[in-house]
Image 1 (cartoon, rainbow, N blue to C red):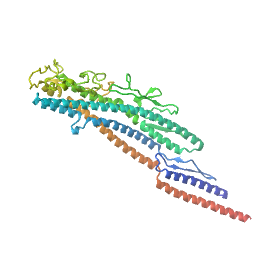
Image 2 (tube, rainbow, N blue to C red):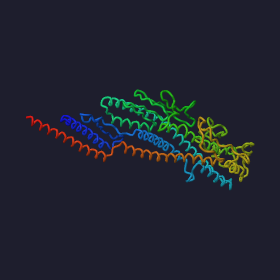
Image 3 (tube, one colour):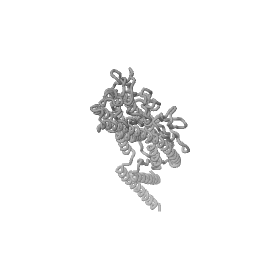
Image 4 (tube, rainbow, N blue to C red):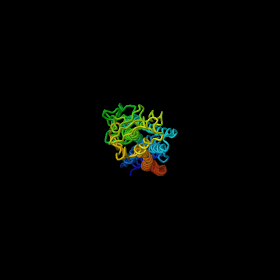
Length: 505
């Protein structure tokens, strides 16, 4: 090897070592920076020229990063579901404490048993009215909580659409900068870290997979295969604000605005992340909850009314017809308007006497004549009908009540309950509370599970692509030794040149 070659080799080694040391120092300085990945400087040996340093590169496991983003999307969706269902769980009451819907129906039944012991006792009559009002109020509260959660779900859809559009614009800007930087210097590692962080933030709203190109370009594909447009000049998605009532729904004939992409409604095609979860809650879970609460309230009122006691009505004094399909009927939204009828509230003695006559039917309740004015104070005919039939499985002996609907639910009639309806109103109301509160408990458990998964993947990613300070410090010691070795080569070559020149002189 000539002295010139040795000099060039040692000089290139010094320069490469300097760049590697600078990269290691930068790694240590950014070890705690969120989203930062370890950068390395690779040396390429060139014959007769020593070593050539390549641009700092990232050591990132792209498959692990994609899985981490997917789990973050699941965690974000679980968190939203748990938050929105928590308020509904709270107003349902606790079966363990004996104040759920089924428990309040049972308390009303027990109250009628107590009233039967002394039908004329005014205090007992008034106590039953108060119990009925408490039950009606609980239905109102449950319906209100469901409606509030559904409105929050739609508001979240609007918010997430705006966040997704902003996130896509950020990714477009970073991608342009990355491509320009790669074209100029071949080094865009820091910008790529920023883009990965932007994609992770985006994935919390809508789960996407990033397909990266060698030139720094990128393609974002949603979980359902939709390619997301990357355009800095216009929004990718659009939707609109809306005030939701119990009868509102999205779809043909509905009033809830959908989420559009390029002018096409993609609401039903979105999967993963907070946006899809908010849509599922708004269009499926919460309308089903509303229908179940409505059916419990309506069948309670109808079964009392069928026996001759209009105990529960809506604000106009009407009792809904539970034989009609749920969608479009007066049952829809009834849980929010149910109340104790004005007549009974003013005259609790009607609990004993009945409010109206019943003609009787072979397929429904038997005939009934109210206790006349001045009739027997100990009249128990009405109370026995309530205890035997309103709270039972039959409208009269040998004639079962029509089954409470479990299909055709929701304002568009497309939803179904995940359970079979019990024959008694007490059993159905209790099952509604148990099922809906169990959903909330499951959502909370899903948050914990998803969080644990994300934490585990983040740990793996940090070990694989993050900065290990101890490892970097050890590498710096090695690099310093390499620097010293190259410096000694330079020093030795310099001495040899001096000796050679001295010999020539």
